Amino acid sequence: MIALLDIGGTKIAASAGRGAAIGAVRRIPTPVESPLATLRGLVEGVMGGVLPEAIAISAPGPFDRTTGALRNPPGMPGSWHGLEMAYLLGQRFDCPVFVENDANCAALAEARLGAGAGHRTVVYWTVSTGIGCGVVRDGRIVVGRHDTEGGHMVLWPAWLGGPPCHCGGAGCLEALASGRAIARRYGIAPEHLSDPDAWVEVGRWIGLATVNVTTVHDPDVVIFGGGVCASWGRFAPSLFETIQRYLLLQPQPEIARGTLGEDRSLLGALLVAEDNGEDPARLLTAR
Ligand SMILES: [Zn+2]
Image: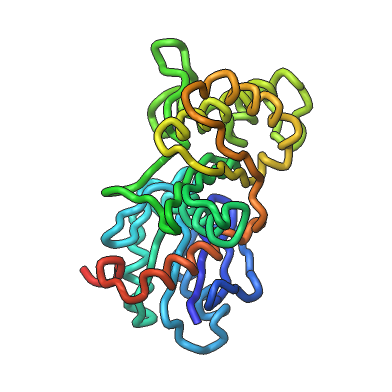
């Protein structure tokens, strides 16, 4: 069995799985103290005393692909910064450890088993406390040298007055349409926001981002998930209008909502580990 961890800004989910199926999921609040001890305890808990064949981690934000260390994960306590999870957990459990960006994990799961099944090029947006984007082509996550951070595509630059983003830039999608941005810009949590004009804006920003990613990747389908999508009916009309208005040279991709629910990143992490179990280039325990 493969132990699975999905590390988020507010909670960590853990499970164990094999063959594209995961077991019961445990969730705990993301700790401030002793993150490594917490992760070790979760792995031991979900494995029920058996050593894992591998550990797969869905990680928030940028990380080092050599050591699995998180780099200033957004909204998380400082104790997580620089934690070499893959190396340390690999030593403790004597197994390979795979780390992948949470949006990429979710994208892979939806592409294979969810709303993207049967499509060749799949884009997945998670619109939650933050915003992430994953692209899957021919069943594989599209990765480059380091990380992709689609939530930080700039839509409203500082020289035109775009609001600051926690990444140090300004006018990123995440600074305009994420749950955190909605709370800051409109003074109310997204689940309580009822102002139709505010939701029109949110839909426009997400629509523009979808146009931009479509110009580059020409996806068959663009899938949406994450907590803010609970308000899909409020912002989807302006999202669709924006795509129709600005995507002029390409056919519009199918727009769909994810079908796998909040455990999709755990499932995607499992797929990453199963895909790469024989590939030493992806084994992160060696230094
Ligand atoms: Zn940013």
